[in-house]
Length: 59
Image 1 (cartoon, rainbow, N blue to C red):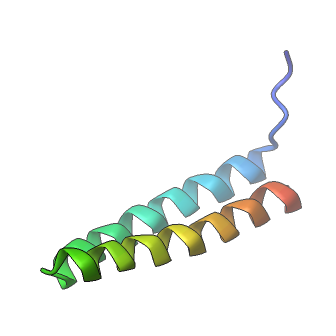
Image 2: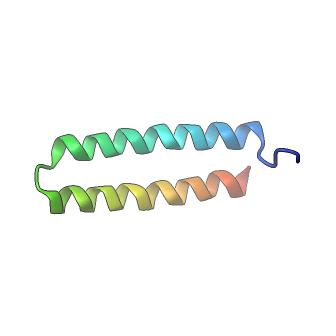
């Protein structure tokens, strides 16, 4: 089966993964409270998901 994702799409998704990991790490260091950290994780995941979809659609 042929790979359906272009190089640009893979690069975009890879960069997005690094961006998400950086944001999650920031959530860990900024929030001691589990509730606030969880909210930070959710916001990061939602934004990352939107950018990832854009990578796939535009690619």
